[in-house]
Amino acid sequence: MTDLTSCTANELITLYRDGRTTPTEVTRAVLDRVARLNPALNAFCWEDEAAALASAARSDARWQMHRERGEAVGDLEGVPVSIKDLILTQGWPTLRGSRCIDPAQDWSVDAPVTARLREAGAVLLGKTTTPEFGCKGETNSLLTGITRNPWDFSKTSGGSSGGAAAAVSAGLGPLGIGTDGAGSVRIPAAFCGNVGLKPSFGRVPAFPLSPFGSVAHLGPHAMSVEDVARALTVMSRPDARDWTSLQPLPEGFRFEEQLGGGVKGLRVAYSSRLGYVRDLHPELERATAQAAQALSDLGAKVEACDPGIEDPLEITTSLWFAGSYQVWRTLSAEQQALCDPDFRAQAELGAMIDANALHQWNQKRGLLGSHLRHFMQSFDLILTPSTAVPAFEALPAGHSPMDPAHMLGWTPYTYPFNLSQQPAISLPWGLSAEGLPLAVQLVAPMFSDALLLRAAAALQACNPPLRPSL
Image 1 (cartoon, rainbow, N blue to C red):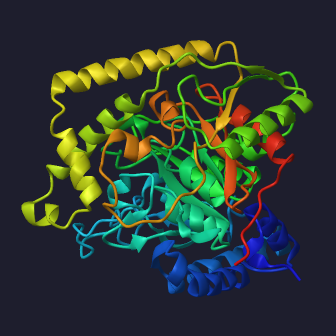
Image 2 (image 1 turned 60 degrees about the horizontal axis):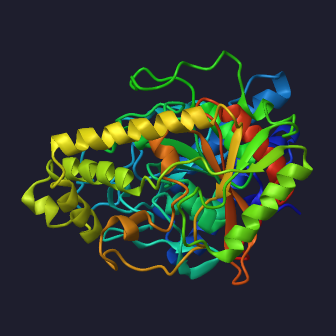
């Protein structure tokens, strides 16, 4: 017997094609598991069983026509998918983790990624939790409370796509769509033990554009590199509403078909501390060294080499806090009174950044990006830990002072590559002595998403992802 809730998207598509199960059967199994686990896990903040089952029934019919007449089906036909509650989804409220968003308004627009998923036949399950406006690397809010880590419910799932990562790891759908403005896909992927991809900026069209600007990416969570590659193929299809998006890929191009070839001959800069990280959990340092050895054994040319940058934490948080203030200033006094204390604190810090200072931070960002572009002329990949620590205690909003160190100091490997807009992926790499996921990160040059996924697939084969016992 096959546990349908533990199947990857690729495995489900094979089962559908062979007629061994149906999207309705899979969707019912996933919804049953959501009903059992979500009250404690708190990964979903909105579920729509009726809509999911209706969508699954339509996929049943399309798969039947495919088997009988050879008719085409979508790339994600019948695959259950969750959507982070920062992403517009027609018919469902997008509350952004905030009590100040009125749910009783028009919700008739799909974001580009949601529209592409529907076109590909995905079964949308519901919305996953986020901190208010995606403002931090933990998933807690005054609206939805704390989202837990499926490996240990006393630990955080990370953030801000913590609901998406927790759902995927716990078997509540094989794919979850998140956003990443400073690590918000990769942090929870690392903490929850799944694969999390931040593509090159603009590879996945967005609408509306993030108030936090061009550091904000959209990316998938899954339990395999193959699944995130398939999801990226769908998500990257063009949408005219995003004027910052990249040139469309060649017609017929599929990331999941680019995964072969391995890493032999690729030049890898192995940097366990990026030249500035002081505090790194020893088990994560060992895990990254093991991953470096695995790449070397596969034929890559691995060199211990830091990229020669200073910690860009202050650049990141200054740009982020300025964005928080721009959201804050659009809210009424009544709405502001309902906000998360962490978001309020960010906005207050952002209010002190004037236009001249903001320009200077953007200039510093440009110098960082230029330096990393130049560095990547000598290397195909950078290997680092994904975070400096495993998952820590799950606490409510406002538990610590809001400053750069508390906000992101424990994830020094993620935010540099939002500033540079490079594609990056977090891969699980075993468990700590405490039984918590460990993870490593691969980073590629801008636009080299296919190369990144190819290398990630080769590395994943050396240490496949694990699932928690739930």
